[in-house]
Image 1 (cartoon, rainbow, N blue to C red):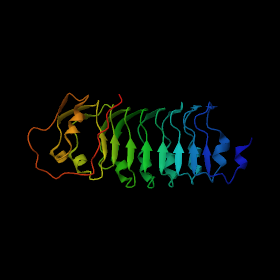
Image 2: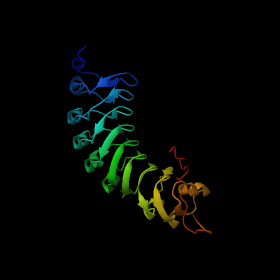
Image 3: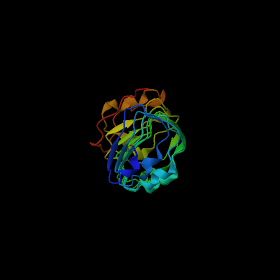
Image 4: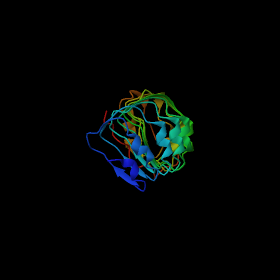
Length: 229
């Protein structure tokens, strides 16, 4: 069938099949698409820059495929995008700073890939972003400052925990396990549940509190996800 004739199609769910090869060119002609779900297939190749022509997309899900290469900077043209799901693939390189132009983005899953380099502060411009999963990559540093859920476990980030993270009043989930962090947990984390010490898992040089820390509490922080590494 010629999918390109379905010009009014808004939602396309093809996940959990045995599709192989690259993303069909026909899909790129479905300009009314709002949801394109291709998770858990054997799709290979790279993300075509032509996907940026699907400007109505609100959800793009390509998790658990065999796609590799870098993320095309042209994806920043998908300004209606709210969820970008690219976890469990073979992506490499750095995260394009251009993704900071996806101002409607609420969910960004880039975990379980081969991304490297520093996580740019530009992502902090995504003021609507609530869930950011970057765990199980090869990042070496981060400049991030604000989210509800921040998962960085299993990366090669070293040094101390930035004090700013303790000021994230909306933070609910924080996972820094199995990295190479050192030094004390910042005083700005004071008043958190004692489970904060779970941050030490996989970070043998990271020390927890000794004594009482008299700093404001942050009731929004409620959960520290256990690493699945």
